[in-house]
Image (tube, rainbow over all chains, first blue to last red; front, side):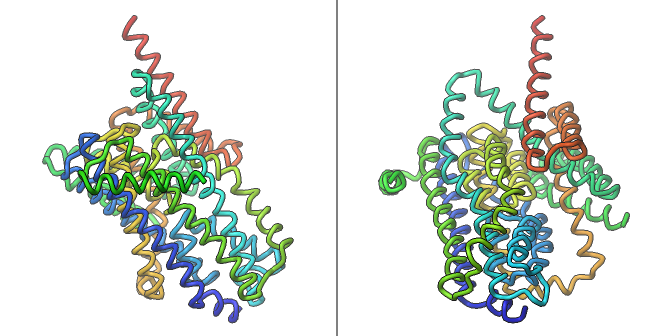
Length: 235
Length: 241
């Protein structure tokens, strides 16, 4: 276990993790740049560009914190740099834990057990990396085809309203699925979700009434705070 | 081959825009998104495959191909369907650039989508429109930077900060997700309350019903879209009649 963790935290693996982090941040900067360049073409002014970036950054604070708390559990199992690499890209902590333990079990060792050695670690890394590659390959190969299909559909005039409706309904469907998977975890989770569901419209109406768009930018942060307080009081 | 061709056109476009004006059209934005999106994702694919290769053959800890295959096929049995279903189902919401961003940085449902939808509501852009896609791109990029930087600081800081927080407080972090999802569903349900109800009904159904885990996301999104569109159509025919 000790030797495996020494390997897991060795400088060479840090180099790989650092390169991945650099690419993720580089990609985000490039996309902010080209999106701001394209903003005037879709009728967005500089103020709106700034507001969108701010809203995205603020809204990521709460989720990031929750992601990190879960990610910490992975550090003791697979070391700092691999955790950074796996959570920084594609993965989420629960699914990576599954990958790591399946990889370790394939050489007959349980993840986190005293017998966990360099070979078990290497196999865990293999399984996590190959497993996570599926998403990346699909996105790298087929996003262009999805774009072509969408462009073809959008070419007909009345299809644009259809696309809008499909996107909105798809968004509701995606969040309802995620929300449903939280609600079945317990009564407290359900109450927190309903509380957030009730507070959000109030914040949006207030921001409209007071003409305070900053309130809207902070809306998700405020909703999370309310949800946490409700959950804290009930548990 | 195609990549090098795209690289040429993209570099031409970059030099073109830099010598003339800063503004670019939406079409150019998509061309550039494909170029940079693919370049960054292929680089990460190369990096993620070279790490285990290095451990196996550079350092000599190779566990043997059969062990790798055993672990991988067990893992693939759980996640393989999701490789295809997730990018396709989230595409209408994320668009071209959002797809490249969100699948590289991860945490799509818990971070990328909520950030994008809040930003769209702030600037008053609808999802699925051009303005909606630009807004989502800006928001997801910012979210990705915040998330990665925070993760980096916490891990480099030896996660010391988190050990300072009392257990009662860290255990409440499990309520972050239900709060996010409840809030964002409500944001959409304000415009179309009925759609929200349909969505939550499907969400509970696929989570509680006998639906295989790998198909849940897809079926929930597909079901919600179909029922909402049918409902809209029925309303319209009623109005015209």
